[in-house]
Image (cartoon, rainbow, N blue to C red):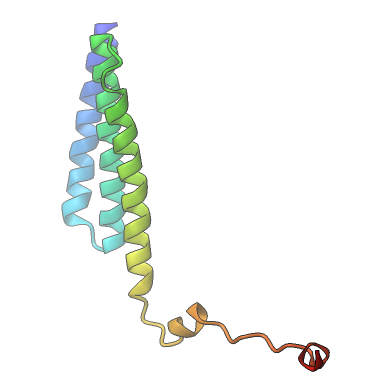
Length: 108
């Protein structure tokens, strides 16, 4: 079992190195964001493997927190980048025109 865990940790290390290359060289911000998300998943997998190696469940709250941080961070970055759009009509989509009420409603 320790051989499988050692090989798994080595593979995660190689994957993390490749992701770090993409994180620093990425031609666009989207590539860097995806690389950061993948790096967080690799860290979560590494912590889970370490927990399995030590036969303990003390790392489970850490795994939950890392998962929540990854989700909230991804949503926050996506929302931030969506506000930086170059479209001039982006504000119109956020504030639609109010609907007109039928004349029958206005008489009462």
